[in-house]
Image (cartoon, rainbow, N blue to C red):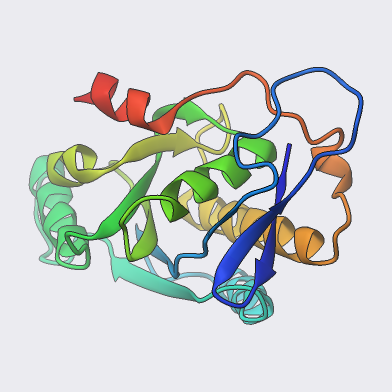
Length: 210
């Protein structure tokens, strides 16, 4: 599996080590655009500890990519029922999404994804005509229908249901791991032997989801 290596405005993929089993990343030996990243999170006010860690990883990632943390208050219009709350949150998220965004939905019903597949996901996004990459983390009752239809892909970080604050921490840590280790041209232990299996094609999932 190739790893992203930050270099100016381009994310460069380095060849995987020899040996092992599995499919080599389709971007091996190639370069793809490094899109600015935004993380849109719906939820209540974060705990001080979570906010501190998010800021720490965000600051570290500035050395490798542009990342913006955009929190949205859950139930922004103080709706009294669950459906109305989800609809209000849905509208708030959609107001932050542009037509040229490449949208990744973090959802418990999404495709299982590991660190290796995250690298290929970012590569796929960079090879599109998108201007930025937006990760969306839903509120207590999940995502609304508009953002579900708009998303280019839905993924989940764990088979367990994660609180939105924990999901945010896992995401920023994985992004930092991906960029930081690759820029040093070293292999993170969790990515060895850096081979991707099983494979999946994002364009195919988008077709199936629709």
